[in-house]
Each structure stands twice: as C-alpha cells, then as structure tokens.
Length: 325
Image (cartoon, rainbow, N blue to C red; front, side, top):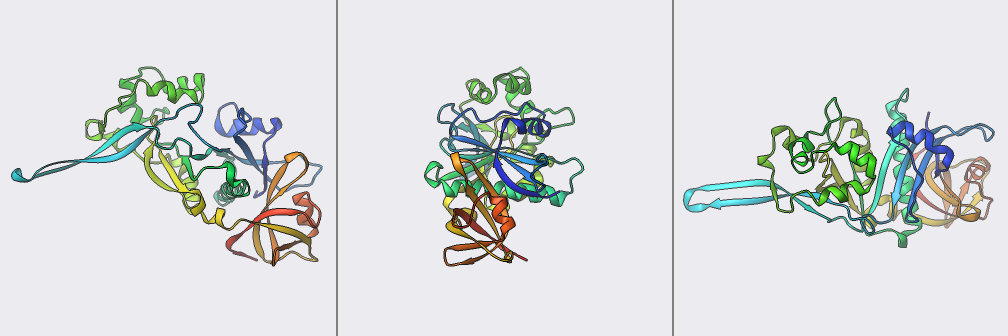
C-alpha cells in the first residue's frame, strides 16, 4: 500500500506510531518541532491507514545540550625511526548544536513490500524538506539525521559495551526510557572529555563505529538519495552515523517555489510534491501529477480535492526529478 499524503500528526495517530517504534508515541511538546505522518489513499469516509512518521525539529541542542562523538584522526610519527601511526579517535562535543533535524523516523514494515516501504520513506523525507523550504527562515543552515547503530540479538550495543559502560554501569535503554531526550545530556557528564583512541576498544566496538543497524539500511539509502552524507560524527550510545547536509544545497529544497493551482481537465504527466495550507495553519503534502505553465500548476479536480484547496489557491511545490507518467 503506497503513501498518498503527509500531514501533521494528531492524538489519534499515536497508537500506530507506538506500534512501529515500540515506545509510547508523543506529539511535539515544543513549538519548534512537528510530527509528520504519511497515510495511504482511501475514501474520505474511511479511517486513514498510517504508513510512517517523522519528527522535524527546527534546531537541536539549544535548550537541552546534545552530544556526539566526532570521529577523527591523530598521527604519531618519528621519521628518524621510520615510524608512522595513524590512529582513529573519538572526541566528545556539541558540533551539531543549532542544526535542524529529521528524527524519530518510523514506518510500517510488517506485510509491506520493500518497494512500498521505500515509497513511504521517500515521501516522508521529501515532505519534510518541502516544509523546510516553505518556512525557510525557521530552519537552520545545516540539516542532520541520526541513524541507529548495530545491536546484538539481546538489543545490546557493542559500542556501548566497549566504551560507555565503563563510565555508566546502568542500562542505557532503561535510562533513555526514564529520562527521554535528556538521557544523553545527563550521561555526557560521565563520559571522557579527552580524545579516545579507538584502538583501545574491543574489536566489536571498533567495528560498530559509523555502521548502520540492518533495519535502517533502507532509510539510509533514502536519506542519501535526498543528499545527506555521513558527517564523521556518531551517536554516543551505539555509534550510529550522523548524516548531514547544507540545507540550501539539497535539490529538494532548491526546487521548491510558490505556485497558483488551477483545475485541469486531466492530470499532467510530471510528478510534483505539493504543500497546501488550509485554514488555521493546517497543511498537507500530496504527491500528484500536474502540468506547469509559468507560475500556474494545473491539476485535476481529484487532486484539488486531495489538497483540500480550490482553484486559485497558492501552494508550495517542487517537481520530483525525472518522474513522469
């Protein structure tokens, strides 16, 4: 089942989000974040079938400091002795403070074809970038996303077992459940502030650095298609990689512009992602086919209905590269 539109989440959506994440879903508590949900097409008189969710944050670490490890390098050399050693290092810091973030990305997987999962993730990520572009001043110059790192069959992180547990002996998952986003801020006070030579860590911990949990490989592929890349930073808990991009360099942001929608007798051939704003600040993002001429986007009557606007309304939209027919 393919996703049809993306909209802000409501309390009724949280049960589905909790099913995907295994944690209690919550609506944004802060004004600077939005929880987006993707839903499948269906008749108006039937309940929406939810397929995925994504939390969009305007800026991270401003109220509650967040830490990451920077994966760097140091060299020890003695030319007289013919010695040269390059060592990988981890340095605790707050380098991504102030960046916008795509977070808590979750989606339906059970009984869902991989291609449909990819479609849902692509729509969620593209919709988030469209929201950023349509409210550009509210979002930062940098955009990040954290991916989960490897874990064993018991849910334990080899990286944490090799490094973090020496400084905090408690269960990190239990601490994260108890303290929420503040967990990493609290534990960072216990972690070493000096560079850590990864060669001192167990082989399993070294191998986990910047690797992605198998369940998130599809998500990584979708994010990299959107233009995000590994930033040489990792999560302090499981060493999952942080992907990063300059917001204005992302093609999905650069393509967005303002359009006036008009009704056409039939749908066009070019695929667009369209954000329509309704009364009271409500909005929705719909993936549809349209015909562009000048500053006008001609769409079918069915598409107008899906957008929830009338002909003549102003929308934000971007053509999806290479998609026609």
